[in-house]
Amino acid sequence: MSAPTVPHDYVGDQPAPKTATRARPGVLYRVLKAVASLRLTVTLFGLAMALVFLGTLGMTQDSIEGTVRHCFRAWVAWIDVQGLVEFGKVFCGVDKDAHVSLKVPFPGGYTIGWVMFFNLLAAHAVRFKLTWKRSGIFLLHAGVIVLLAGEFLTGQLQIETRMMIKEGESADFVSSLTETELVAVDPSDPAADQVVSVPGEVLAGAADWFGHPDLPFEFRVVEYFPNSDVADLEPGAPNKADHGFGLRTGLVQKPKVKGTDASGEINYPAAYLELREREGKPLGTYLFTTMLRRTQPVTVGGKAYEVAFRFRRTYKPYQVHLIKAEHDVYPGTNIPKDYASTVLVQDPELGEHGPIRIWMNHPMTYRGETFYQSSMNTDTTTGAKTTGLQVVKNPAWTAPYLACGMVALGMAVHFLIRLLAFLQRGAGK
Image (cartoon, rainbow, N blue to C red; front, side, top):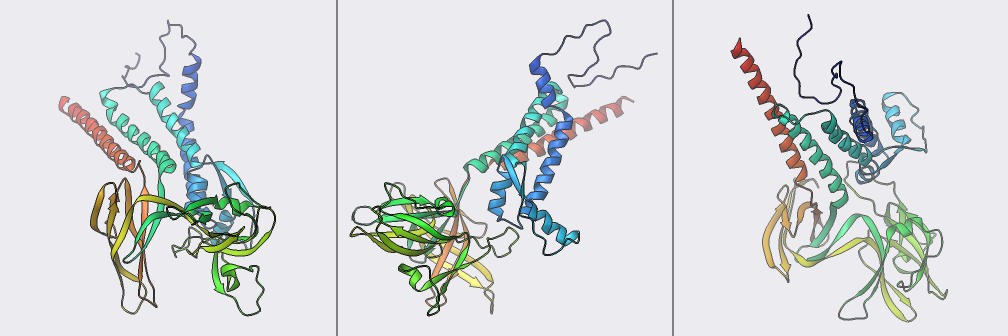
């Protein structure tokens, strides 16, 4: 006696009737079936967990932002083997002085995420039937797809910058936290400054003289510092600079900020640059650092320019005025207890917005950007306060919330369907 046939809601891989002749599947179906492989799904999950582990170890060698950019928001992740060595020093008894200068390729977050995306779509195309019984699973998987798509869009579109404002003053630009620029400003026009910007990557990788038709001078990198500090020069100390700030100040090399550092600091790149006119006349060697916000005067062909190496700026069509800065610390310490900023947005196009008080977990949203309170500094000499506002623009910020809601709803629907089926079977006995 043959066993009864149990109906199910899967398609594909069903035994054909013995009397039927199975037609050879088309090329498209075979491709979809290969992409929908459950083995591929398990492999992708394994690769994702390995990438998270390796990326976490990578934070011992790179900053959080650098690790995210080079591992999770990359098609190919270059894993620094020294991270594994550091892990071995803690848990496996590896020599504490061991060092390996090697990076190996590994599938990046974008590669794993997109293959997961197509794997899930293909699985629904060849293995599942769209039925009411599986509506919860479909909704759950749709939430996963939205989550993957949202993370990709966030990686492509999200912009994080910082706005620094002194109490009683206004600011109309934001600065990048990681990208730098060398700028030459021509202030001769009273109506508007003419600014020429050279990306900081050029300084980091320049090996010879660099020039551009819009740049009033050429420059050569004498020495570049990915992260540095400044210190007063001792009398008679050797000095690479012979003009500008560098006559009184020197650079001190610092290790790059790591994701495991608890200080929350960022890298401050700096460089000694030798300048010359386009015709070859030397202009001197200058010290440029992102730690100093002031520009340095450089005269080229009898015309004065203001030159600075700074974090890349983006100017806004409005100004943010800091009305009041509050900076409270625990008595006897420098540990912040509370800090907040009361600001007024002055927009020539849309009018005034505010006053608004920005403090922890209470940001301000304006023109599609969110302003968070991120830092507060008080000058110990003058008492002047400077607030730091983190400005975030992320058009895909709703995707994680929508995805989590869809997953939770899908799980609830699937549970209720199974519960009703169980209760119906119990009532039929």
